[in-house]
Length: 422
Ligand code: HEC
Ligand code: HEC
Ligand code: HEC
Ligand code: HEC
Ligand code: HEC
Ligand code: HEC
Ligand code: HEC
Ligand code: HEC
Image (cartoon, rainbow, N blue to C red; front, side, top):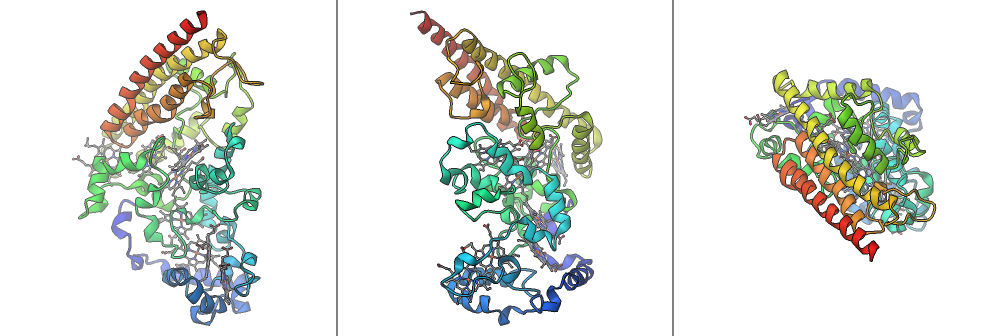
């Protein structure tokens, strides 16, 4: 597993491949494809390929490079209802279910992990229904990355494209080696609220891995997050860095305020309907056991290269950065909540008198804009940088910015209070 990047590109390293291929062919025969002749159809014999060599030569060239090309043709994923240039709309678009037929192991792992939940989590955001169609269903904004999850059928009425399995091994090569490269994660894990690409690639791990030579001695994304090729990606803290229960009482106080800011808890600290969304999307680990299970898997990866005390110290300190960030964040939420409580910010119709961090940029006031950026950009960097061994992200893009935000929020709140008195 450590040597993924060393093996990348070398298809013959897997001694089990011959046996696997045989097992796969037997499975195909069992489900009847070989008997129908389709499974044995060589690339050259296919009507689809003959025509598509002229219509979409790039797709055919890619497909011919794939490990599957000598076993079946286009029909296995797109069906055979479309026959010519006039009826392309009849071609089926594959879903992860299509791949499951032959790749049940990867499918089951993926379904148990966070990627398969990507669409649910995005669609559950309170302002999702206000967003433009091209931005969500058209995959030009949020939907463009969250397509890694299972896209519901109703979305396909607007746009039938977009499925998860080609996120890392792109069509129509569907290469394992491509998916093992860290760049396979880059298009989504970058930017404003989750710059793992930027953090990792400029960390010591990333600079060793990307500078060539003996790259396998430093970990890439897959080494730590897909050990043994496990498609069920999930971390202990998750994106929002929330967990229950919390033994540290002081920290639990900050966490309760953040949970109110997410409106998972109401003003009185009682769970709201959003707790069900957190459960359905597996957004946070809600038992000590589930947290420890993911953390232990990660420690097992690190300790293949580092000593256990070094790893423990580093992960504990990264955890403590979450606490420090939460302390500043909680103060900011309380200040804005105070503005609601005192009627200085009026709640929108039907909404509680409390800030809602999940509305992202669709807020009412500049002070809430500062609060959302503080939460999604700066708090994230302060701890994500710590987990990705990037001191600069923790400091200048994270913790220092949080301190700047809190000064701004105090001043904005004071000005709003002064204005309200006029
Ligand atoms: C006689 C030529 C021809 C044959 C045979 C043919 N196709 Fe196509 N196919 C086309 C053309 C042309 C388009 C693009 C249609 C357009 O531009 O309007 C297309 C489009 C497609 C699309 C994309 C559909 C979309 O909505 O984006 C898929 C998938 C596809 N073909 C698969 C197949 C498969 C599978 C077969 C064999 C069962 C096949 N094609 C046979 C000409 C052909
Ligand atoms: C009809 C069965 C079948 C279906 C459906 C199928 N595959 Fe495969 N796949 C195979 C076979 C056979 C291999 C080659 C295995 C080998 O050579 O060891 C393979 C290999 C692969 C590989 C490894 C390639 C490499 O570089 O080693 C990937 C990735 C892959 N498939 C992805 C997919 C995806 C994604 C889908 C759905 C869009 C899919 N497959 C659908 C049968 C299938
Ligand atoms: C550049 C790709 C990209 C875009 C664009 C994007 N996201 Fe995400 N989103 C991600 C990634 C990657 C994660 C996981 C990050 C992590 O865990 O650090 C994520 C996480 C989330 C989560 C948390 C899920 C969980 O279970 O913890 C929500 C909710 C979410 N995004 C909603 C949205 C919404 C709404 C939009 C549009 C306003 C959006 N995203 C735009 C890539 C994207
Ligand atoms: C292993 C499954 C698989 C096979 C076999 C396959 N495709 Fe696809 N194809 C896909 C996937 C996955 C997509 C993306 C679907 C989406 O975005 O929803 C796709 C999309 C397409 C598209 C539409 C997107 C675009 O880039 O225009 C065309 C056209 C297409 N395939 C043609 C072909 C042709 C021609 C063949 C045979 C040479 C073929 N496919 C074989 C899985 C497959
Ligand atoms: C997050 C990126 C990612 C996504 C999404 C993804 N894969 Fe993979 N896939 C990988 C990586 C990385 C490997 C190489 C794993 C290894 O090192 O053994 C891989 C390997 C594979 C292989 C080859 C296994 C082998 O050892 O020969 C198959 C088959 C496969 N994936 C199918 C799928 C299917 C089906 C889906 C959708 C359900 C999917 N993948 C989604 C990253 C991904
Ligand atoms: C040296 C191992 C390692 C490497 C390499 C690595 N990560 Fe991480 N990653 C971690 C650790 C540790 C965590 C925090 C795990 C926890 O919650 O216990 C984490 C957390 C995450 C999270 C959850 C949110 C966050 O940032 O805390 C995402 C998403 C993620 N990593 C993606 C990536 C991507 C994409 C890459 C490659 C660009 C990558 N990681 C490289 C170790 C690594
Ligand atoms: C097409 C966009 C896309 C690609 C490519 C992608 N991811 Fe993700 N990833 C996401 C989204 C979106 C989420 C959040 C899923 C959710 O809402 O549950 C996510 C979540 C994760 C998480 C879980 C973080 C948590 O909450 O615990 C990890 C770890 C992760 N990705 C690692 C990777 C790695 C490693 C790769 C490359 C091999 C990769 N991803 C490729 C979009 C992507
Ligand atoms: C594939 C081997 C490998 C894995 C897995 C790995 N590392 Fe590293 N790590 C290295 C190497 C090599 C260096 C560079 C050592 C140096 O700077 O002298 C390094 C550097 C570091 C550094 C910064 C430099 C230093 O020594 O202070 C930290 C911190 C670190 N690793 C922590 C971790 C943690 C935590 C994990 C698991 C989440 C992990 N590493 C996983 C190989 C690995």
